[in-house]
Length: 147
Image (cartoon, rainbow, N blue to C red; front, side, top):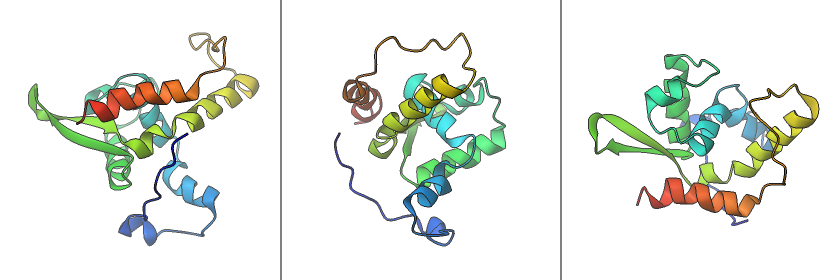
C-alpha cells in the first residue's frame, strides 16, 4: 500500500485534541455514526452530490450531513468542485486521504459479517477482496476524474 504523507491537523482540530493516542486521534474524525457512512457512499455507491448522500438508507439529516461534509473537507479527506452540468451543485470526491480508508471500511465490514446480523441484501464476498485493485479503482473514480 502506498504511504500517505501525514498532514498536520487543522487549526480547529488542534484545539480539540484529547491526547496523542493514534486511536483517539482517528476517533476524533471517525468516531460518530455518520462520517464513515458518507465516505462509504462516496467510495462504493458512486454518490457525488449532497442530495444523493442525503438519500442514503440510514437517514442522515441535512444539517448533520452538511456538518460532516465540512469537517471532511477541512480534514482533506474529500474535495469539492463545481458541477459543470448544474451551476448550483457541487461534486464531492475522495482525496488520497479518503481513498486510503478503503482497507478500514473493508475490515469493519468483515467484522460485521462475523459478529453482527448483516442484511441479506449485503451478501458476503466469496473471495477476499484485492485491496490494492479496489484502491486503484477508487483512485480512478475520484482522483483521476478530478484532474
